Length: 202
Ligand SMILES: C[S@@+](CC[C@H](N)C(=O)[O-])C[C@H]1O[C@@H](n2cnc3c(N)ncnc32)[C@H](O)[C@@H]1O
Image 1 (cartoon, rainbow, N blue to C red):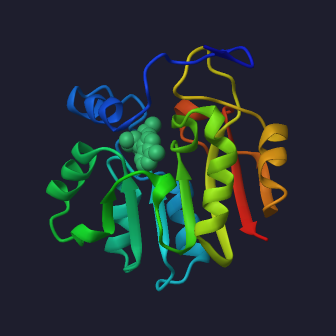
Image 2: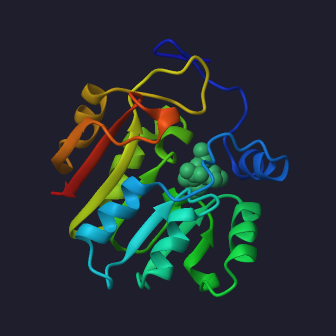
Image 3: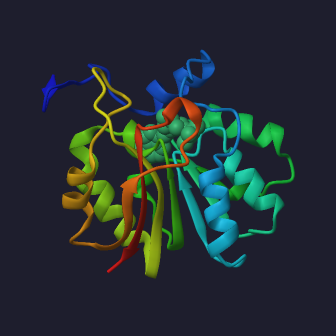
């Protein structure tokens, strides 16, 4: 399938697909450490009691650093049981019921902050409106969506890319755009390929 010139993968991006990627160690997106962009943002701006969600958290590096630093209301959700098991085996003291296995789009909890890191790019681009609606829907009043999004186009996805104009169109009816600009602090393999977003629920 071809969507705006981007070839769509022919597989279903379901839990089997993602779980198998972890089982077979085909996890090229996994940078192996917590992205400092997210950590610094939370340390500088977010109260320790805030309810924080990391959707599609995978190995959960940001999750463990924030937990270790007193952010006790931090939650993760991922379709992959294997990803969760790996995280919990490395972090046995992390509360098991705060790393959920399931579909982000079916989540029924409220948060003050959602941290975006290579989850948006992993979902079928046809679900992007649902992503905007869902993030809006599960944020508390004045809640924020913060993170990085790819600003390049990939030949085949996932990952699926995009650009600033597309993101502005997608989010501006539901969020006040506090920041949507080229990211200066990307990790080196992603330099020049990301935008940083800080969006507040309208
Ligand atoms: C590209 S990986 C990124 C993982 C992690 N954020 C990181 O940066 O290492 C995308 C993750 O999203 C998860 N995922 C994909 N679709 C999902 C959905 N609908 N609900 C929850 N998790 C999902 C996958 O299992 C996978 O762990």
